[in-house]
Length: 135
Image (tube, rainbow, N blue to C red):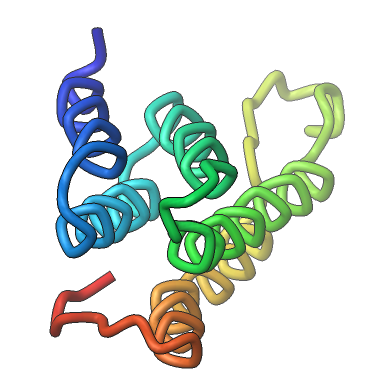
């Protein structure tokens, strides 16, 4: 089991069964965690955020939706960077694993910089306080 999964499970539980304020904090924490961890934990948290956003009567859609939007941007940027990566054999026959180009990496990094601010802005627009916590 990945080291983050126990934390993710407890936050998901809190998002469903705790007080309103604690539910909101738990969704914030899941969103921030998703923006910081790698795969496969990010994908698992994404799935949990989708599930929480779809839960009726909990009022979690606005908060979860802001983080899902940021994660959608992340996955789109990763797909774009991967599509621009050199294909096997594009190394002139040298047998090098070139991976993602420096330009693609720079573009991905520049897109990532504003995601936390974007989520914070959306949350502010819908009236959800950030509680002074960083994304």
